[in-house]
Image (cartoon, rainbow, N blue to C red; front, top):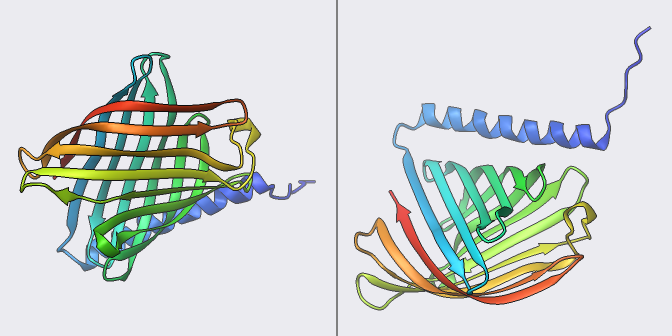
Length: 237
């Protein structure tokens, strides 16, 4: 006699994430068939090196989107690699379906695969768009397989000093609703990063930059804060 095992919370979360991914891919395929005029845009907002003398950090923040004004498929990845320790601090890949809900705003839903510090699947819900005063906003809420809720909010704005020289203040906040012991995450603000970058657009699509960041990191085990010099490259096509 075959005994049917009930679904666990872990199984249910995986099924939800797989369903979301299937929905994203299915909708995107249908969208591509319906509309031949697709926008295909890749942007590496940050490919940078950070240092304060002791620390050597490499960071990336890249996005690719394909779709029309109403429906888009987004692929995003963020992460950092500590050159002095030889480890990844965090790294993830998101696949999102994005639906335009107003002139400058998209609602996004999908899934995230976190590779570091722990390999997990998370459901993702967020908003991305342009707030008043031309402030670019990218927000996301992550719900992992165990029901833990984490969030990320980034804000940035461009000030044109000349047609090619741009000053960009930027802020990013990562938060956790609860302690996540297996990740060493403490509830509250887990990371706060703010800084400014001055970039020179050799071409609109290719712009090296330099600047600085102030970073606060809080975990169950330790607290870090540091001021870092930043050197990087912004590329899009």
